[in-house]
Length: 419
Image 1 (tube, rainbow, N blue to C red):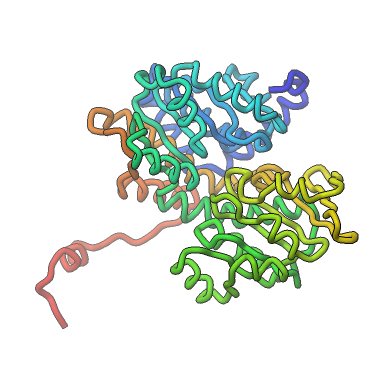
Image 2 (cartoon, rainbow, N blue to C red):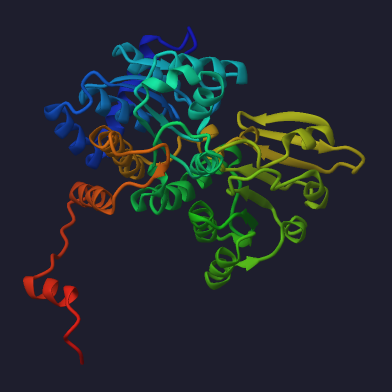
């Protein structure tokens, strides 16, 4: 972290934010109490590359209370919350990262985690796993398994598995229902809009909002943009997701067509070159371009810079690009083309991350309990563990649900009864 960050005021603010997060992460706190008694991670080193937010801080405390030694770094140059790093560092935690770090800093910090010789990796985007496999394969022999947090990372891991390049088992935590149908949908929807508003204070009502991608993240963004009065257009390549968007009441069309219509563009695909100079040339002057995917590859930022005569920092996370040879045309980019919900805001709300990080903590526990059975493949947690997370969250929300009677169980298990 930056040398000037670890001061008393920053530490105090970080502790307040961690306390606030813990009060809203009841499911994870229930797991922490359990792990503190059972110590399932005793003598286990966990190398972590996640967004260094207050919610991640609660996960680090949870794993540490369960006996683990955690060494953590950021998984994005703009997502670290310096006050949280200061607070956790003051508690003796080993964290690396600060908001606005360079790409060189980013990989230096990743290597710090690698050199801690982790037994388990907890990753968000697969950069830590990639670093181990490509530059430090000698450290893989120490590793029992790993966990992956996000869709982009899971896609990369499955590509590694297909190429027979993956050297240790990974749990795709993102594939939990309590992750991608909660975190991606409710979390990304709210935090993306939050990031755009903090960056620009733009009015959504009456604007045409183009959402690129209609997976769980895109669905959440589109719904929230609609709720704020936006007229939503969806661009997609998947036929079923496109059909879902149509059935949800949105216009669906190619980006080449949508480019001329949009006021606000949000990319949430996990793929590269979603918005290119060709699209930007078609956009209205004053259009705002935003990314909420994990990596800064969805908007062709190099192409945009090359076609711009001047770049002006308007607000802390909002830049104006003047387009060459096009009169006074300009477009805005929020969060430097990086994921806007963490660059310009604070990421997903704690309640949502409680479920995601229950998945991470239980995935670490599952790996250790099943390490003899797991091969170098991408796995999903068993449904009963996902259900356990749902129950923990319901308990945290003080919600009770029905249970099957003996007769209902018998009926569902049989086939003889008819009309």
